[in-house]
Every structure is written in C-alpha cells, then in structure tokens.
Image 1 (tube, rainbow, N blue to C red):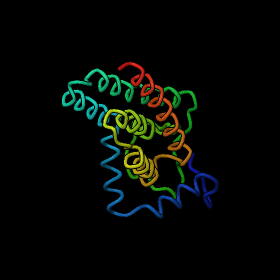
Image 2: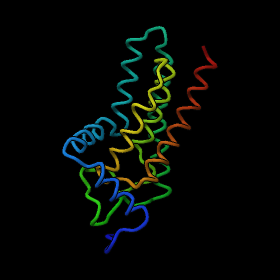
Image 3: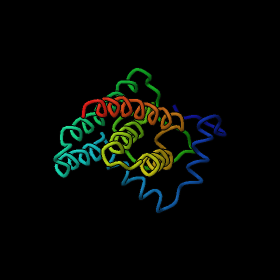
Length: 172
C-alpha cells in the first residue's frame, strides 16, 4: 500500500538513511552485494571454496556452508509468517528487484551475518565488522528493507551462525 504525505516512523528513518548513504558508487556497490547475497549463493560458494582449499577442515567448511543456507531458510520461514510488505512510499526509491514482496527479516542480512560468524571461526579472523555493516547498509541504500528488517536479519543470522559455530568447536 503506497503511503502518502510526509514519511513517518521507520519510513522516515529509511528515507533519511537512503538520502544520506546513496551515491552513484554506493548504489553500484549495493547492487553488486545484492546479487552476490541473493539466496545466500555467494556466501555458500565461498564456503565451498573454503572446503576445497582447507582440506584438513573440509567437513567444518561444509557444515558452515550448510549453516549459511539454513540461516537463509530460517529467514524465509520468518518472512512467510510475519508477511511484512517491503517499503512502499514516495520518499523511498527502490533501486533493485527482489524475489518477493516480503521484507521482515532481511535474508541478505541473515545469511551475511551467519557467514561472517561461521567463517570467522574457520579463518581465525573476525569477519563480522567487515562484512555485516556494508550488507545491512546496502539494503537501506537500495530501499528494499526497513531498518528493523536488517537488524532482525543480522540477529537471526548471528544466532544461527553462533549455534553452529559452537557445535563446530565442540567437535574437533
């Protein structure tokens, strides 16, 4: 439903964030991130690459990769229960296509955070600060999620990734 008039609440926050973050370069980067993260395929592919390169921990990489896909599936399940529509207001410009009209939580935020948490454990580097904020910001730049969508997605991805990472640590 197209809201009219001055944006309020989360629409206003999204419109301000988009206005502040949006530039030719940020939109191009956000679109690239969107395509990479679609259906968690880019993160899944990186996990498979890890399994090929790190033969000693191949099983862990495969479990982590499956965890990323599982986190994505969890976000889709929540979307279908919550059924929150994507932003639809004249103050928000939608700059990329989406596979569904459902917004909460952001599946990109979920799978990216799960990948960052899981792959951090396998690489020995904290990937969360480098990967998660840019993906969350990209969803706002593109106008396809409310701020709470990306925050909830990151929380869900962190939960799923953290649970699987803890299990990986217990099984050497």
